[in-house]
Amino acid sequence: MAPRERADAARNRRVILDVTAALLAEHGPEAVTMDRVAAAAGVGKGTIFHRFGNRAGLLHELVAESAADLMAAVTDGPPPLGPGAAAADRLLAFFDAMARLVIDNLALMEVYRSVPPHPRTGEFHRFWRDHITALLREARPDLDAETVGRLLMDGLAGQTVPDMVRAGSSDRLLAAVAQQVGAVLRA
Image (cartoon, rainbow, N blue to C red; front, side, top):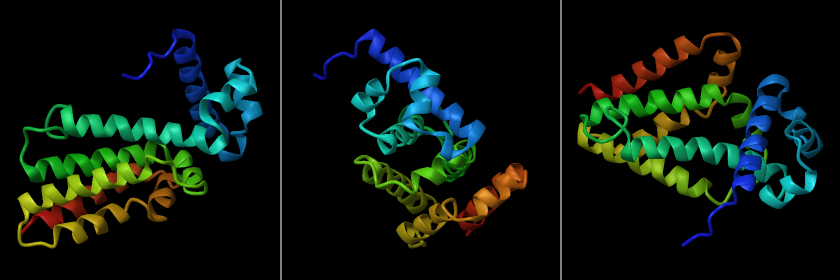
């Protein structure tokens, strides 16, 4: 059993993550320095280093938190994202949720790609790949589900997403993601 986190440590962790997210959203990746985060969070820089190791660890924790929330929604949340809906509906809901996660965390995702991989990166990617593959196999057994799923997921990692978000076309992007997934689902 993992040791229980102290209340002050949990509070500091939450404040540090919230401040980091706010700095990213308001000022971009260059604003996320350990000094600025510590000052804005009202904690010592050593607290951040002790908890997260370095800037990359801090950024990884923000990404991991969002990814873990989406994983929980997929495994235990209500349908259609969670269990209980048809595979096609779940796949559409998953890609909508993943696209929204990327859109809502665009600055974080861009800087995240520039730091060494987090130990949980492989776990998250395997989960997404396995989830998408299983849903595609159920909805479209005639497809190479693993390859088609990877190609669909790769579309959210390209330059089109940040270009459209910055152009104010997030709604258009979400509609296009649904159209793309829907086209794959139609026999």
